[in-house]
Image 1: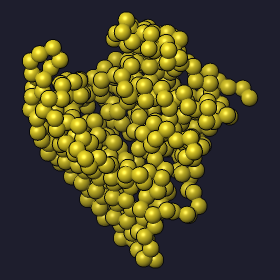
Image 2: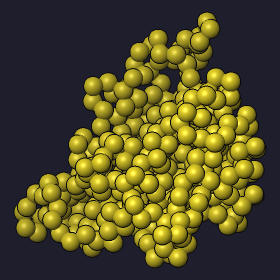
Image 3: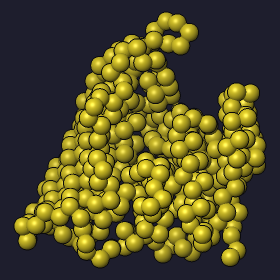
Image 4: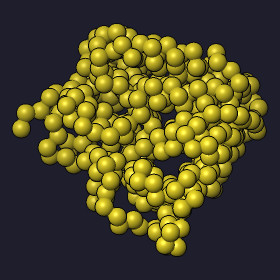
Length: 372
């Protein structure tokens, strides 16, 4: 079988980049008929002396001291830097005709996100944003049920993403707590996943309003001293769904120790759906009001979104855990788009585009009450 080699470069070598690499390396092992051959071309890191040997041992050909060197030497860029650093690398890659995969959110500010979207719209390469919850089978099944009208008229939606680990006042200050680098806290880091999932399943939001709280206002800095925290530990938004008129609520918190879970509940005139990360990413819980049945496992024929997802997801017997699996499926989809545009043209719009990410960023900016 002829395979298209795709030289992939990573901008940054943090934990999320290594998660992407885990998923990427699994693809040739799990899928014998891949139409592409992923080549680990290199990593740009701010500290080549410290990370160089580690990166090479992970299977990469080269280590770069700058994103500019990386862009010049690869076919496709996976951007895993802090949010404020996305824009420069992405624009350089697009202007060089390279494909771009970018972590969420798109940027640290709405202005930067709009600039990225403007350049991306004129770029030839396949681009995608890592909203990986779209690659949960439960979400694809929910999309198919909603598209078939099985919930009737949508009345309300409620989403929640709870993460722990930030209640310790001695947790060190990091870029995720720096407004200039991150652009926001719990909402930018976590809640934006739920925003995108609502957009994907139910369409755009209007009348967005929100509030935020910072529970721990100072953090210790490595090397001594303390820094003021200017991002949210907790955020909540309310909205109206433009297509259905339904009302919605989304909550995101990084102060949920012991209760970590991501959920989305959709209520309609003919039933309801519940999607949860708590061991149920394969199937949504579906109540069918027309029959009075509560389904925890859906046996209906696969619709177009689930069929598309099954072609790129890691099989259950080879799972690496849902977090890595969903990243692997998302990267698989991106690479298929790069090497086979004809295939991409036949698929439903499963993955998040740059325009999708901009729409999520606009909601986030409305909650924060700022555009800069």
